[in-house]
Length: 301
Image (cartoon, rainbow, N blue to C red; front, top):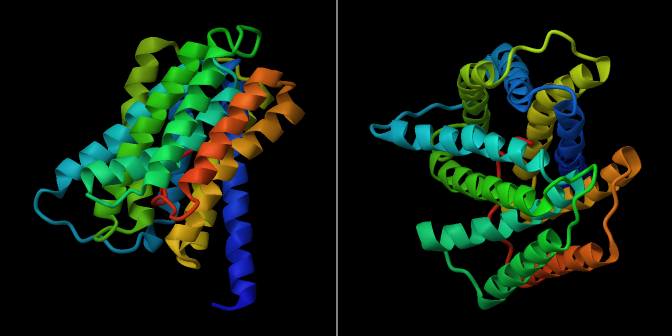
């Protein structure tokens, strides 16, 4: 691949990570005014409409007998369970701390691939995983309740559960992507999410009758820019460089999240939390010292 093509791929991946990092801020802003599940439904609906308009570019669909089990499990992991835990997390912890927990995703995928797919995992990767987990636990325990995080320990635990769901999604995606295009699988997730969250949102809270421009803009941003835009940029970048190299960019998500929340929400980490965050990054770096974990493709936020 030419140097210019690689540069464009790198730019696309970096922008995609920035968009996913910004999603925590958009969710926080939307959740401050709107019922969380209505926010999730809104972004899923908008994403579905975009995918429907672009359906002619859906790519390959090679259904095999029994695939329905994997497709249902895929949608159950993400968006259904994933966004429930994500909503619970951001109601209890800060966007900055939730963003840090996402740094565990590549390591969780590596361990999951070892357990479920029998992929090899090095001792260095395992050591990095344990170090990052220690950092994440330390980050959660050192958090104090404030206006940004009323119960950071509980919120970070919910975010960890969301990462487990994203891990299951990624492992299933790896199996299904041999026969289905990334466009089709992501579109299916958006469609299922719309159907799943509509009755759930209606059951938990009445439809909001007053929506401020800020909250409405946050939902539109999540549905169009994050769900669709980040997906497109990410897949373009991955298609232009080896997946093992592209996976390293996922670790930029918490960096962008920390930057955005300090600039836009006024959140900050105390000294102990900064040390814990550094431990998470050190664990992630150690895990990739000799080999990179599989790409957590298809993350929706």
